[in-house]
Length: 422
Ligand code: SF4
Image (cartoon, rainbow, N blue to C red; front, side, top):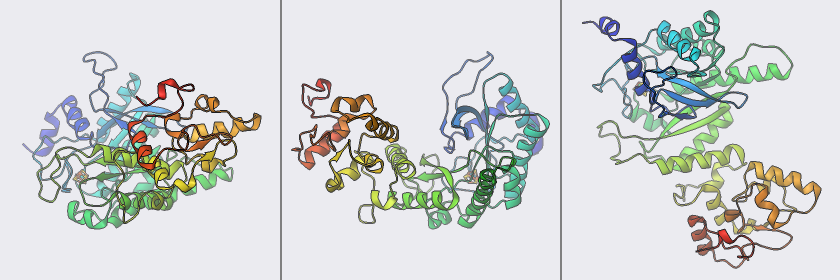
């Protein structure tokens, strides 16, 4: 039987199951894989078939997460869908993806589509099909839900920009943290082929926002921005190199998010490290460090260095930084500038803002801080309130590190009994 005949013979449900399952390793949407399963009822959704993302206005939406095809002419070492793997293959045609999306949308199972794909013939052919899905949904079917599309490495910039006129978000995966690892593990892809579509999207997004700032009523272009995904742990790059790359991508391509995907050992391949399980804690620490880059004004070189290139797995990156900089603490909550408050462990963006706002109405007391969202079991070691340091200021650096790792506090019993060291 030819490939076309096989495709026709396979019913839509079977193809959808294969393609939703094949999409589950793509982390470049905000979350993935719901466990809700109500077989045979309206509103049923497949495991690993629905993920969540945030729209340009900050709403969380559930998306049908699926591949157009898991056939791929490329052979990336870390990928379950690579050409050399013997696994069930399926492809959907453009009309099938459109119908499926509309069907789920009408049943209120999803609020949008996250469409990724293998490269069945060529980058341009694949990009063309992704464009066609988005165009049909928007122009023929009047679909106003959220659309996240992949931009295909090596695809023509004009095609990428055509897709951008219909998608809310687009992502082109950077895949690996260095060109050398890309050559070794993903030999058909090039750094230039990845950065080309990323650059085309970045330019389109910048033009769109510039025209909006000048008051023009322009059609949207990727209004929720672009993102990318990097596999962590499949190659030898350090956290320092990874964060340096992320900061550069945020700066030069106006990315909204870099997603870190802990390498899941799915293939036997001597180019890959022998990991027993994915480095999930490392992935988590990278997300925390990334959050500091995007929202707290940190630079990658403040968090790590070539001499100390790995994030501390036992402690979050902000606490680690604070421990290395005792000269910056304690800070007085009643006088410290906003940017300084942001660097205090246990004070987030929201609590720093509320502290700044509350100070206009009077001096803050210790007991006000928790109400303002400060996590005192961490912040107490780094703050003073009118010259008074809740943690007493006598703790040794090593004891402090142990308290932070254990999540324990040493505040006086009269004030927060539940925070005492036990
Ligand atoms: S191009 Fe994408 S789908 Fe194909 S093998 Fe590489 S990572 Fe997998």
